[in-house]
Image (tube, rainbow over all chains, first blue to last red; front, side, top):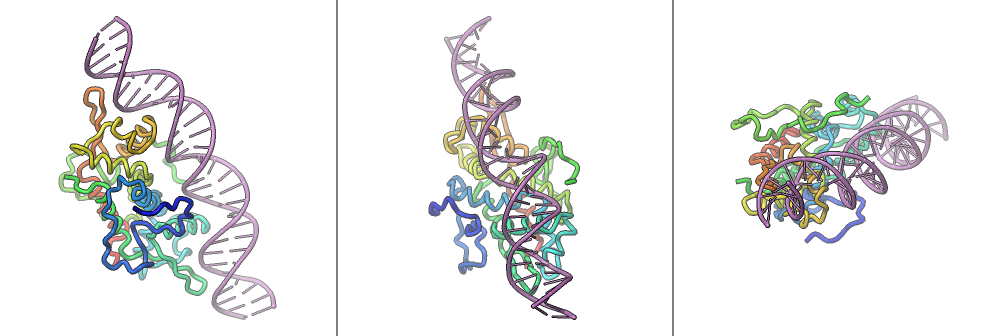
Length: 132
Length: 132
DNA sequence: GCGACGCATCGGCAGACTTCGATCTGAGGA
DNA sequence: TCCTCAGATCGAAGTCTGCCGATGCGTCGC
């Protein structure tokens, strides 16, 4: 079981889609029934991050961008939202383990966490192992 | 102003994970960049449905249940919520195209839409085609 | 050092979400 | 027919979310 950390800030919490912290080269991964409230909560956390059209767009735009990375200023225009709002959404995606942030000079570059979406797709089969 | 489909019931809207209506045997599927606001909105709609721990649990419990189906009375106890609340969550999952509802006698049986999660996993690769 | 720039954070507002008890509806059984 | 039961729907309360303008913070160029 996955410990009982309740009052967590959601910043330290990096779920199924474990990011670059910890060498997770050969993911044993959860492979636990999502019936478990813990597992369900972690999965839902990532799905909630994807549960907003703006954030789906942001991910997609970043992925399609040169070098697979983009700074905030590249993103405000395409989604048509203010800089604080875009920054807010990006933070949520980073907290969910879907994006990484890298500060370079004045700019903050966001890029996709390599296997994140793939691992998330795997997580889907934890929800319903064999759709038979 | 923030997009002009505010008063939508989310009942008529059946996104990527097209349900049993329409024989969708050989999904041509979206395969469009999720950069498109339309596509992003449809994807986000399904992800939002999965963005709640209770709903993830419900899906998982139903999938693991005898015959891959369960009635509301089977579900209230495991998630520890009231019957109206569970009913509400189930409706959201049905609207998202993840569950189907079948009335048999006094009971309403819910079961997973066969390829729904698989198709959703495919939708993930529309977000970021090649993580390369 | 100073101003400009890119971005994060804060404060606040409006709307949406989750949850419940109460109630309504429809199917079965006596 | 009437009662009971499974489930949906309603209305309300509390919380969370998405959005913005204002502001704070660190970096760069002068």
